[in-house]
Image (cartoon, rainbow, N blue to C red; front, side, top):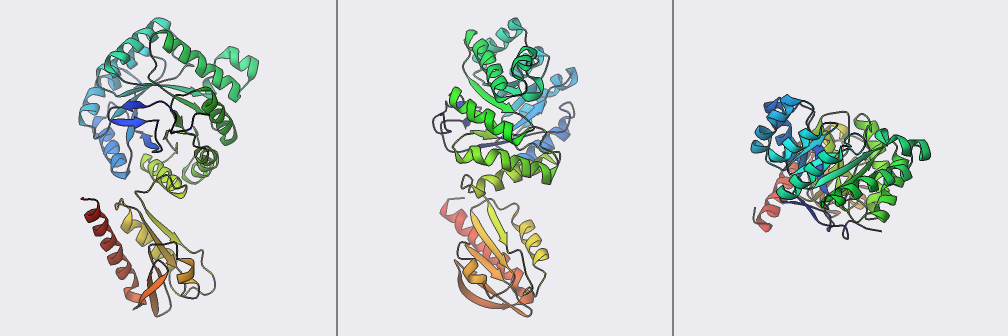
Length: 359
């Protein structure tokens, strides 16, 4: 099996995918590419949240003409998503996109594919073979149905064709809307291919439902060392895709640059508005990108003991709360000042982090 440290290295601009334990975060704009200002705002918001790469759709000629404007002003490498029209792939490469996504189910012209491969080699950009369960070739559908086997064979065919044209700078994705089928496809893909794997559950759904399905389908793969780059596909603001991806990876020990706010589920001992405080702290730390675990607990009965794994935290009370570090109580504070004290401690930890890392 090719785990993420053993897959081939592919570079999207200056971003490495594969051959390392880092998982590259990416998302896709929902603005039409022809709407350059809207597209760039989304891209900048995504990069601010932690995206390494952003994909744009090239749907029509107006999108095609706008690619260079987007690429030239983007703070990160841009990937072009191409369906049906191979000429758009050629235009995207020439306009400066650092990676192309092609769907084997709808770009079939061998001559055009040859032209794309020659140009991609010339510009040294990778191609993602994006297999989707909704567009499996008819003959494979007829013989195998919507299965991981059909998806792998579809990917193999396309990879074989790319290699025939002298192209081997490849990333592979095997996306379905089923968490179970996605797991099966990617596990099989990790056995069959040495190329980096782009993980994702397509059409996962809205924020809560899509998050649940994505975490259910991708966590088992990530724990097995499968997956080099990831997109959490959600029917919501694209920034939420990066937030969910970071939180999921952080929970698995695969992403550190995050303030992790944890809170108890509460019980009858609760004497302050823990839900409000937790949301306030989450909002406060959202733009602080550094590793820190903050615990917010409802009472002082179990507070310090439960918070030993946290870096800092509070346990609230009716009139007075406590502040602790690594599970050790450092001071007691009037409840009305508890949140401000916690914020100050978070900022102090952030300053120490920046000083330590020369930022």
